[in-house]
Image (cartoon, rainbow, N blue to C red):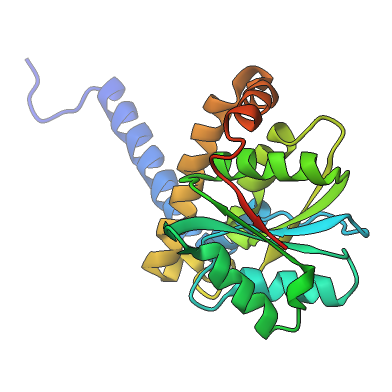
Length: 236
């Protein structure tokens, strides 16, 4: 019986495991070194910006940030002549006041005349519900081509939802507004930015589930009838 001598098979196994460990360490080191370009690419790939032709209306989605970045981009596009009117969409916070009124104020501060603003107050608590409320407005106004303005990190989910909820044949383009709380170049460095992007990933999964099978258009048609007189308050 031999003692102190390793079996050749065991030596080979140990050597193989050491090689695997070495490759794993090298892989982790390389991943760490290139983490910034990868994270930057992930955010930039998530953000969408459609080619913007002239449209019937601009729609600025509610829940703008502290800096009013969505309103700023919407006003910029209005001044460029992209559309003759602009919709200020937002949730009601009180019976006679809400985010739509605040956005209207932001738009006017940025040079949009009041008579060119359509204010839409709704009770939506998600992008999907907001899209359904807005679907009624575009039907009533007989618009065929709109530009939806929203925060950069929100663009991909917004496009997915609006293209499925808005009336068939409606052309929807997405305009990305820079966001003071989300910089795609350095988003991983701020806790709030990480939360925003994580929430968007989760929201996209929910949207994929809720709109599976192309059910969004059917639900929208039903909700437009059901919401008549319930949700939107239109002030031109």
